[in-house]
Length: 516
Image (cartoon, rainbow, N blue to C red; front, side, top):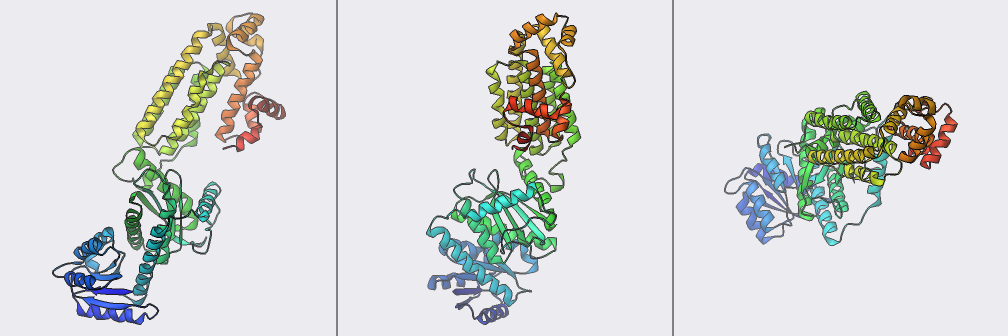
């Protein structure tokens, strides 16, 4: 390895040359220069692999030298020597593509040895990425699956990493970095991105893992070299500046969005991870100028308030107050956007509201196939990533639902509509045909005939459909046991409820509960 030391301080040059000479495990030739101009002349005459340069020098400083090296000698790696008062220049050097920096006052032989290892890793990574396309690695899939399993069922000690390269399960001072490329598609660059990240962690001697995540996100978890937050931020900046440079160099896609979350203990990983994801999603969803602070990135989702809101929606629909129900939905979205509620909470509650609307629409008619338009809204909701997209989704949902209701309402007579309202409000208890007939002022025999004619189902079958659809909503909420669901929808016997549920839906209540 040909190494060039560039510094106008002769003492620093001699000290650095001495440290390099002591590292006899590396085959190397050392050159020296006093400023950037002299350094470029040496680069013209010799194939230089690594340039270690001061920043503040006469004639041509270190930043100017770095620009010339990138243009004329792109194969050469450059590290900068820094003082405590010129770290802003170090930041600029890292952003311009410097491999690393070494503080002059604390320079040790271990620092130099690590720099040489990084240089070797950098050349190895370049050869690996340019010689042939990166092959997909099954280990990344395993790591993603392990992490997903941990998020769904966290262990008390935290995430158990997959191999000896990773932080231990009892690791402290971890950094969770979540980032997204500036381009729109994750493939076919996944392996390249992960190889770059893992090669960097290896060269830094940092235990860590990296794997792809949903929505073109990547996750990198590594153990920080220091428990001091200032040094952790500095280390993160250096790592991701290098990653950004390598991504732009090899796949022409730099990091577009990135956030780092530090956690002291492994058991905090789950909370820290979701804080980071929520913050990134909020930034994109609300088109914010920057990623919001973590402490305000995810407003708590009040389960009791959500239940209350959905119950109010159901009550309005049961009473056929459709316009009021839709207005309640629009008002909820507007309120969430004013408060900048976390996007995943809004989408989760919109999905629940959509299901309530579809379930109620099923009660209106048994033979109207226009409901398929509503069912397709679920896939559209999954694709929503921006505030404006969700507002457009809600507007479309309300329009389609109102058209559906209008079409069905015009087809039903007032008496049958009144009978439907009575069933919807009393399904949770015993309902007799005679009671319905009294409520709508009709002869029970004529009511039964007319109901079947207009709705397409007999009253017992319709009541059964109402109860099962209400049961689907309760099971989907995850707040009730199967026996509680059966009781709440008007079944006194759980076994009979399960039998009816399976005959209507095609699967048992427990199987439906476990389904995704």
